[in-house]
Image (cartoon, rainbow, N blue to C red; front, top):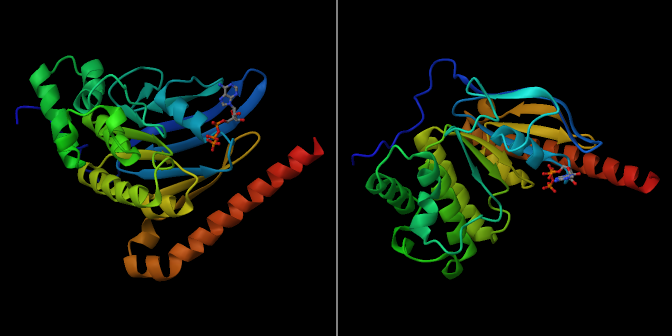
Length: 274
Ligand SMILES: Nc1ncnc2c1ncn2[C@@H]1O[C@H](COP(=O)(O)OP(=O)(O)OP(=O)(O)O)[C@@H](O)[C@H]1O
């Protein structure tokens, strides 16, 4: 194919930092939502963000996307301020965000049409079809969103995001609107695609098993205001898959659950007192 289908660059010995969040504070009006959040994420990393509902996970993702700007501090993406719109990031939304009047293929091409005006239409179509085939929707290219199941719609959302071949994929609870089987199947698809193309993923989820299965790292967020409590690397534990499955998975799951339970309890106590 003539088109520029590219994986992210092969990992160097020390992976380059793609995302740098530096002392970020964010307010909605007079309400402090995120307080002094700092972290950095390297190429090829799959990082999940977990925290109680309302702690600011989606807000953080929107800051990474550049859709929101920090009150204080800065978000740097590949050396540039995150507000600079470029091809470095693509977002996968919980509610799919498809254009109902466009076909599946046109929806997948959408990001390319906006961002890759340098490519001829035929090349953009070829890239869109490559990702539709890759994600098992090749035969549905001419269908419209109303004709699709939830699982199929999210396949379109994923194909659209991968099609722009971003260095960073931002995923906001992408499987939470799907039934358990479809969610499991799509998790496997995403895991395969991310590994194949070495994309960096920042993944917001409430699902502890999803986070444990997919992630290299998990960021735990506290609430009111949102701040980072822990940055847990799973790389070493996962390097021994048998020990990971038999021993460490349950240990880490219990640790995450203790944290979340504590957060929810603290949060409801605060609400009762106010
Ligand atoms: N546009 C907005 N204007 C004012 N407040 C907002 C706005 N969007 C979100 N918030 C508030 O900011 C806080 C963080 O919201 P955010 O959606 O980032 O949390 P979250 O952790 O992603 O929540 P959930 O897990 O329920 O999706 C919440 O208290 C929310 O009510």
